[in-house]
Amino acid sequence: MTSSLRGKVKVKITAEAVKTSVHSGIGSGIVPDMFRVLTDRIKTIEDPKTGMLIQELQTIIPGKDYMDAEKIVSLKGEDLVKE
Image (cartoon, helix red, strand yellow):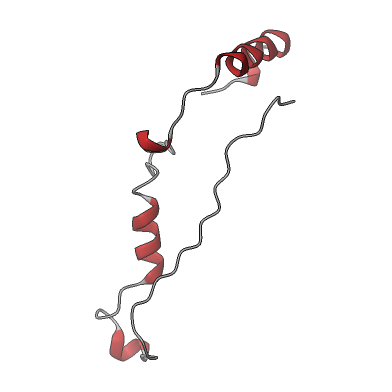
């Protein structure tokens, strides 16, 4: 049961390391691992240990939405909200 949906972001990431094909035996260590580059970038917006977004991506919940959430918890019980 929700009165509003959580935020959603669609991101398109393009990364280039080399302009031509390179055999893995030749390029290893020279060409960056694109998976590692992507995970390093994600770590700049989310703490991998806590899952919390950086402060710049957080927002204040509007008062009415906060009160609606409290009302639902009071009706459904504290088990609905787990840390």
